[in-house]
Length: 513
Image (cartoon, rainbow, N blue to C red):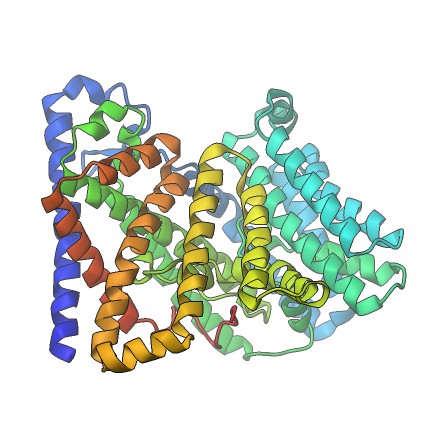
């Protein structure tokens, strides 16, 4: 069994490396044979001087993140020093400092208009709770706010309001990002408040609580989401002494800075995202290079969020919080449920606690249906929220729909695996765990292929998603067999590594049954 897994691992790693090499080689051949095209790709700009190559700057999230680090790292350190002093000397005003710190930073670096936008959502939720709002009103307002935000962020007058006095465009993106994260924190606080207070009205200390949580600076712009209960625990729990926290912080910062340099270096050599502005260039890539492109999109997406979540989470850990573990590499995840469970753990915990479990519980109490039906409907409600939160555009809809289909297939497969018929099939036909693992790998292979296509819609939009879908549906028999073989090896490697935790995991992540 170990030899078999070693073979799968070798084939999968070799296929990954070769596909990325073919992507770089084919990309270089296309651009070198069409040098005039390089100048038409606006996202290829002058890179590091000592390398002498262009750099792909097409990723708005990554460019905005680097801008945020540039303007905030000194202030975040000052924020921590003052927070630590107040925590030890005047803990009763620590939450007040969190509010003052965020308001000061946003106002000084971006402006008062941007501060007004950031304060809007907490004020709205305070009004709802002060008026005795229940869970239904909280959710109705939340969906309305998300729909309004998804409309406004494409409006010129909204951008012109945020772009007051010519702040950098990255600053505008930071505000847009913060709106989505603040929404999750306001929902988390409000729903917990309704549960905790049981009909009691909002008091002054509750207003301080929601503002300090919603505006907490290290997590304000880029996440990850820390649930309100976990945020509140940081004021009563001392996880490590100061020396231990600082040591871990320095180690984490060195690691994430190294990851950042590696990612920036890679963007000097692979231009797959920049080339997407000219789809004719993408269509010239051979099949193996396109596989490398799909792999690169996923690896870049993973690395980007390891760096952003890891960095902001490290600052939160200094304040005695326990942020979610950094995303598990997508190159070791073969099914949809694991992608949702282990990539953005904070978002997953939010969805399970506030949407999936309450929806499942409500359905099971008011309806008499099979258990799997409750799960599928609760999952549907979860993915509707995911679609609205990420943005009500077509490629997000396709991505959400394909993910829901994948989760549904998994639910059905788990349901079948618990039946007496499957038990007899396993005992009489498969007979051993090794054979069953091979059988499961075969079943998961097409699901993994669908996952790769669905993610291409999220990573790159409609054109690339549709293009990959056409490529897979029109592939030759030989290409299909080779791709299926590689994906099967991927599934077996992922199954073997399933119990290996992500970086930063301190406790088991709770998930769906």
